[in-house]
Image (tube, rainbow, N blue to C red; front, side):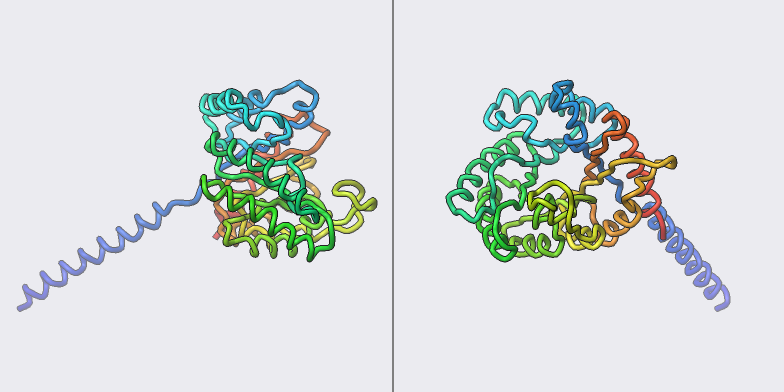
Length: 313
């Protein structure tokens, strides 16, 4: 009897040790989500506007700097939406550079939220060409602007019509439409979050930008001297749950490599809390540094902040 008890005790002890070891191994091998970095083409806007760089050069530079993907801005090739030889060249360049085509940001395509229905419909038709281009580039997302005219409630109704029509068209080829906080009423976080929520049945998401929170300028235009600005972190918190992209934006850096006017740890904590796992779109919008240097400093800051925030208990 004692011999039987001894064997049973030994067997149970062995099984317990195996179970504990297995549990420890599973814990140690738990995969931590690794960030993916995309480069926003606007980071090179000075070089592109000056003619010192082409979109092909931008793609090559993104690969050289270790980015995983690229975010195009259509105004740098505004007449190329249906130029398939040009789009082929982008695909080839991206493949050679080892980067994914992540997004096309649409500007200068008309106001999807205009009060005039004919103007809205014209903007939709123009944007459709870019949806087709995105499909050709295997680019899953197009960013649009919630720009138009009228009071906030009217603007929401107009946006639901214009952006809604475009999203319905984009859904068919599997392209997602997202809206950025990008001037005017779209820089009011609560308003934009409500609009995106109202369009969720059409799979519309958001692009949450660290900056761009001025919703009223002195002269009433989209850009210029700011009169009223939304709380950056409140707005970001309202948008990040629906975010398909995030614009990790910087203007300048202090001696420690931090952005003195933007609390990166706070933004990254909001991303972590919202379980955001999409691309981190690095965008340098300063003028003090050469574009490439500013981009690399911002990428280093993003990497440092991600490690600090996501690796904490």
